[in-house]
Length: 361
Length: 203
Image 1 (cartoon, rainbow over the protein chains, first blue to last red):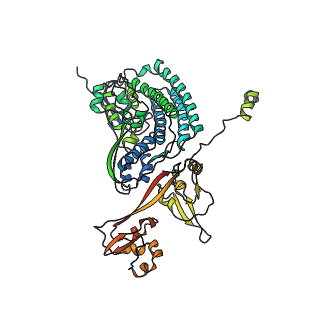
Image 2 (spheres, each protein chain N blue to C red):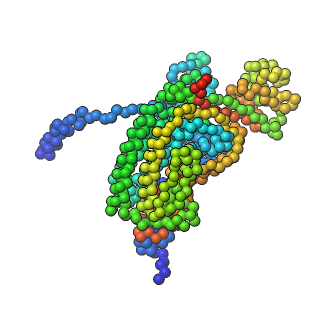
């Protein structure tokens, strides 16, 4: 018998689970969801239009305000694009410190993503414990860069401040705490019958489907795709980075992959602090004219900047491509249809870690 | 009555009194270069306006004249300031400070260098010379230029030379953008160029 649509249920744009406004329309048969559609466009900022015509000194601060949760990577990729345009080189120590700031930012982004997933499956307690870990990470970000969210740490040709040995020791000690706590909650999530096992086999997306819709980031890597822009980055290659992959493709895999990536970031940070080269943190160099495209790996996936600048480093054209739009589309087309209850729709949506602030920049 | 008594008995417990009166929290330690809002250090401001020019947040910093004759000072509007610390780093006279940015910069040997580039669009420029006459630096160097509009000096920033507006000394420009405002065809552009640099250890 062919199933016909019973009721069409709208979730959002204002919903207690969603961090940001977004509307999901679900077509249901009983409790089963047959199809879903995502509607965006509630908080368009027009930040690319504001960037056009301004010198890079101003655009640098606008770029890290595209998204509050992954602000360091926006700063990182924007400055790298401008450096690529004008051929500015970075000293070794600065390159390592950039990666250090980026990995701290990635850890806190993954922790908040897993918090909101735990909150969605009605387990606030473990979520709150994850936020406690995040506080430690944020403190370390503040010790390194001088600010918690909008750091403005990366400047053309280097970084702003040089951490001394005391700071590095403090970060190293904090990483021990973070690893211990993360492993504890990860094992709880892995084995707890009411926490993690509730999400096994829900919101499954196969590798073929993910390749078809070009899913990126942890959402794609949980389906077995091995794309990670960090493996193309020269500094990460020196740190022997290799991307982590899981093959299940369900909610559980996505959350567990994020936990594993946090532990991987801990290892990377330890390696950086152990092998941090001595030397300058700022080279010289003037930003000039050109046009180029540059990619970087944000916590949610691939981030692309395409910039055209004039002789004085004014941005003439800019286009930012952020990861979440593909993941949200993948979520609506492949993850949500087929879930057994309406309550799992929000869980599947949040497990792909959508960021509407990035998407509607 | 009994409930009040039970409350009093509860609050008189030594553990409760101890936690209430002798509570100890961990000492708050400020990060080494925490960037708070910029504050004045009391050094003399030479009103070079570099802090105003570098500031990425519109209207966050303003250099104004004080009541005393010939004294200027920067005023920070806290609602607009984004605490990026660029004004602190760029100020050549160390008038501003935020947290331990100066200390950290002196330790690392990092600084910012400021330059200006003047470009004239040869297609739209009609060689009227309004910019040359209006430029305050030109007036100082060659008073004849400001009075009569014609001069033969090459020491000025720019001059109409053989009917074409020519830039001679870009390095003398202070970035006041008076020429940009005066140009009737909007064909002159003053761009600031900022270089973050570090003093090398050899020199």
